Length: 121
Length: 137
Image 1 (cartoon, rainbow over the protein chains, first blue to last red):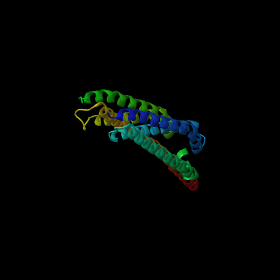
Image 2 (cartoon, chains in turn green, yellow; image 1 turned 120 degrees about the vertical axis):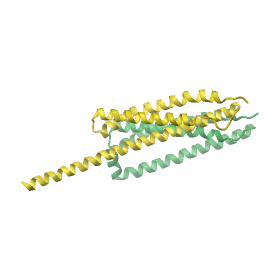
Image 3 (cartoon, each protein chain N blue to C red; image 1 turned 180 degrees about the vertical axis):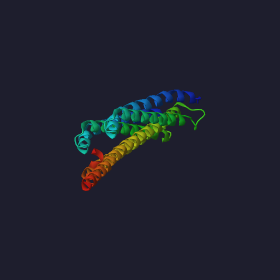
Image 4 (cartoon, rainbow over the protein chains, first blue to last red; image 1 turned 90 degrees about the vertical axis):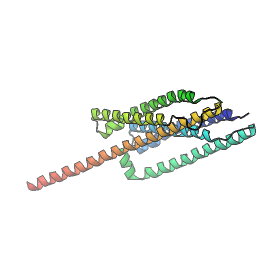
């Protein structure tokens, strides 16, 4: 018998939970950075923050759902565990790299005067 | 092995439509403030532009959702393949919606930039005209 459906449900549960929690925390703590970029315009910062959260959820959860369709047939529990941890670790790595990329760009852009002008005028 | 194509459609369509509507609702509720900023507080123009963008968003997203609906790979599926097909379709739609949101954000920022550029040009022209008027006197 194949264990694919069980593996899918565990995989989707774990990765969706990670994605949603990470997105919620970015939403919560990134707000002040965005507020800083917008020179204290609270309403604009709030709405851009919400829009970024929505886009983040859509792209990440969508990628999770797409990535399911290429899994091989899983015939034993060992295979299930191997593939499961491999895939979850990949997702975590990608999220981490994206996160540091975001921090780098936020830092870089907030140093550039013309970008701040572009956002706030 | 059963013919599960019609059940795929029956599950996929409501999810696709509801997802599109939720995303559009959230996006265009939040974009109103940007629109009023771009049009410098002229609310009728801002609201109608917002509505027009919303129409375009609905048309593109629902059109894409229906376009990718057809199941090409299988004629008969077991339960596992049913889940795989379904999740691939919903995933592609969701990534598309995310990219649409980013594209619309780009359009908003572009509009903002254009407005401020135009204002700067107008201010410079008025300055020049004032100077010319003063020198003629």
